[in-house]
Amino acid sequence: MYALQEDNSALKGEEQKFARFYEDIETTMTKDIEEHVNTIHEEWKKRGIVFSKQDKVSLISVFFHSDIDDENVLQIGHTGLLFDDKDGLYFFEKLAFQEPYQLIKFKNRKQLSKYLMEKYDVNENQPVSRPFIFENNHLLK
Image 1 (cartoon, rainbow, N blue to C red):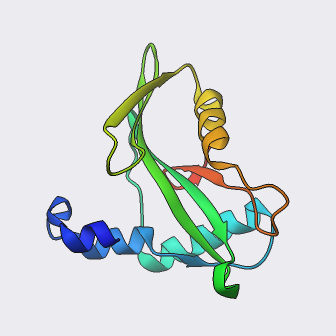
Image 2 (cartoon, one colour):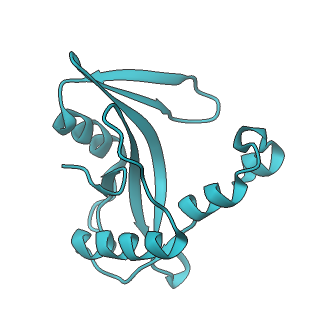
């Protein structure tokens, strides 16, 4: 959010929509991913977040469960765009502000999930749930 305070020109007046999507979501201390998915769906409904039906492009969001400062929240820690093409899937992402965008080709969603979980599922023996991945508004299959 700090970067957007410095330069929010990319949002083109859509700051409130951006904040509604990326704002933390209160949750409970559980490792039950399905419970977290239900919590996200309920909160997104309250926030008016909906996804239009797209055949060729999806938003991929990696959710993290945090219990810092004794608050249990779900946070979107990484997003990218997934393009469906006849010869595979293309994932477009930016890993860090100082890094360039990158486009990676995957054979299927299982490969994409493996790639993201290897990158972000790094905390062992924590009381919080593992990261999980959404494609648009549902758990990545």
